[in-house]
Length: 75
Image (cartoon, rainbow, N blue to C red; front, side):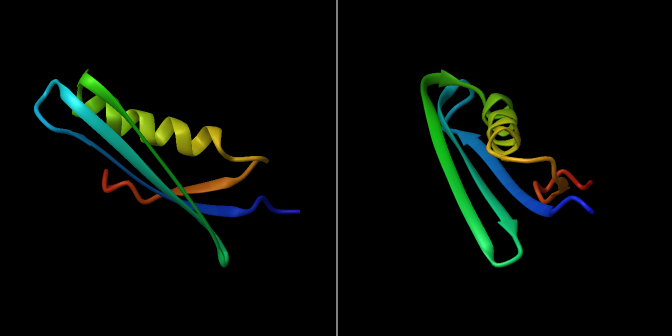
C-alpha cells in the first residue's frame, strides 16, 4: 500500500526583523484541506517563522505520508 500524498503550502513573515511575526500552513490531501496558523512577538525573525510553518505542518501529519513541498523554496 502506498503512502498518501499530502501537498504542504507554508509561509512565514515578520514585521521588522526582528519583530512580531506569524506563520501559516495549508495541507491538501485529495479533497481534504487543513489550515493552521500561529504567531509570535514581539521579537521573532522571518527565518524562524518560515521554519515554524514547516515544522508545524509536519507535526500535524497523523500517519506516514509522502509530502510535496509547495513552500516557494524551489524544491
